[in-house]
Image (cartoon, rainbow, N blue to C red; front, top):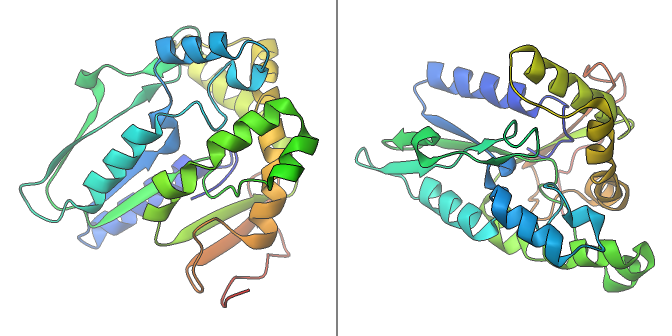
Length: 252
């Protein structure tokens, strides 16, 4: 599932997981967010790219451990027997005052037995890298992000058989959605970012939405197949809009 932050990815995946379980299927829920770099590795990345604020915090292409993501997805897809056992990495977004860190291995989910369905979600899944000329026009910072993004289709997207794309009428909704999530986290006693920090945090995602959502919405995700992409559109209240996108049912 490819959908912006706060649009309801987790809720949809949890509901699908429950429905599949009722049908006797083991569905494993994983997020691209779980494959963010460790806090120390992210700090090192930020230091090495001090002129590029897009790599200063988690989020954009380049801030994920795509080798770990590739290996984990491969393991999940190969879990065909009752003896299968996989440690599924988890990421703690509340760590380091909301800057986040990989959770200790003791907190990772232990997946045992045959895996029937993998529900995998992420805010930038299926983003198509820009052509080099377009990336150059977007500036040096986006050129670096675009170069990182070129590695994602082969490492991650190729594992995806069926896509659900959640289209938003305005990416600016993410500011309020992310703030809402942060307030809920702090309300239950978890550390988190201030409102200003949240705004700065989301600012660093916006170039990704600006440059990649048009391609996702007009051409579909990177590894789309006819009849295997469902695109739905929601408004700020996360409700389906009256007019819905046309579906991809044949080759372009």
